[in-house]
Amino acid sequence: MISIVIPVLNEGATIRQVIKTVKKTSRKIEIIVVDDNSTDNTVEEAMKEHVRVITSSQRGKGISMREGMMAAKHDIIAYVDGDILTYPDNIIDLLTGPIESDEADFVKSYFERQAGRVTQLVAKPLLSILYPDLAHFQQPLSGMIAGRKSFLSKVHFENDYGVDIGLLIDMHQLGARIKEANIGKIENAMQTWEQLSKMSREVSRTILRKAENIPQENLETLGNINLIREQMEYSILESIDKLQKMVIFNLDHAVFTQNYLQWAAVAFDQEDKLQKILSEQHDTVTTMELTAALFEGRNIAELLEVADAIPLVPGIREVVRELKKRGYACGLITDGSGTVARHIKNKLGMDFVFANKLHLANSVATGAFTVADYFIKEGNYCKSNMFPYIAQQFHITTQNIIYVGDGQHDTRLLTEAGIGVAFCPRHQHDYVEKVADKIISGLSLTPLLDIAQAGTGKFGIRLPVISKKQVRKIGIGSLVSLAGAGLLYLAVQQMRSKQTTPC
Image 1: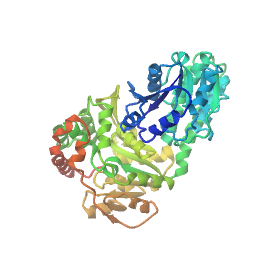
Image 2: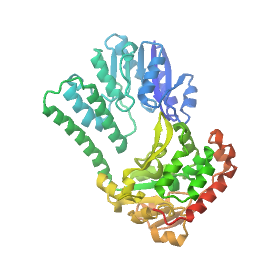
Image 3: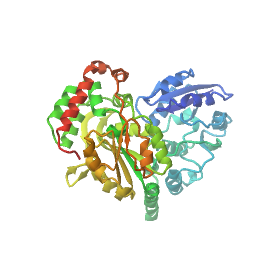
Image 4: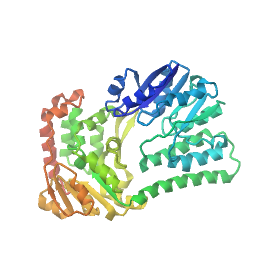
């Protein structure tokens, strides 16, 4: 019999179809779905297929794979990803056949598509230098694999993008017989430039760390390794360079229909402390540090649950999708936590995040907070300082950037961007007209598509009001006292309106 492990994270839309495809094998199998603490309906959807579902003890694909292996009852284990809908019906047969026939101890898949950039520019060149016996593998980063549990129990599962290449190297060093299996044509989502950069670092780090015991014969080898790294970074920057235009959305004022900080304070019963901090009118950085301390002890699941409970501006997914088709890089900016922003970025299919850092230890907020370097210039904090950073790092001039904010909290961003779009402006209309190039006063971001084509029209619609019933659906116990949420929101707005024109 065969154990099939499917590590998943927020794959509610695809997991049932993947399970149904896996079940088409003629072999006797058990299916184990390892949930990486998803925040969507992944677990609920998987359980509809009557498979075993376990929760990973810590977020990360490598840990999920290892714990799935520990839970497996059989010696042959196959791993498949939970977000690919184009697996062939015989995917399990292809992966496990060579092991069942005693031709292999470990099977690495390859499939019909152009090899990814990290594979071509990082993985294969490094393998050719440090592990020439592995250089022939067509897709060494493929995550669809199978192996004997007796071997898998002896290897180390990296907990990042290096997990797949790490398993290949470890199996080779254990003396396992390794085969490749062609699993046909597979379509998976293209990685963003931000993901590619992270992947290249983690893949190269894994290969180099595992090669520490291999003697470096000469400086030429080290020089080649450095060249490989440089080529990958240049290639990533080149991807952004080709786009040459960018749309940046303010997370709290153009994506969320309500302010995250205020709603989190309500959710965690910290609204009185938040109101006190804001009423004291500290400088921006001090205010952020004090508010971050309010979340001490809250875990990542709770923080993201608040984010998921706040309704997004209607139609934003479709707007982002269309902007990307037109060649725009799309991303988020916020004074708040990058952890929350990246979660929303991934949900919307965006490319990047500019945010500060809320420190976590073992997935729990410590209360510490670090300001991003690109928001600081000559000791002064302002989000508009990111414009020269973007120009230097990604070669996109400020004139080619559309910024979407609310007109009250981001005056300089609206003024300095190539096109500053005030969305549902909170300042008086005549003031907003002085700082913004375009105004969208309402419910939908669809008019942004006209603006992105140099449209000149101005639009007037109203934002919807979120109901208390919607807030109660967040599911956090401390939200029982939501009656004061509206009053808190108004009070905070009044206090902020008394402050000087913000950066």
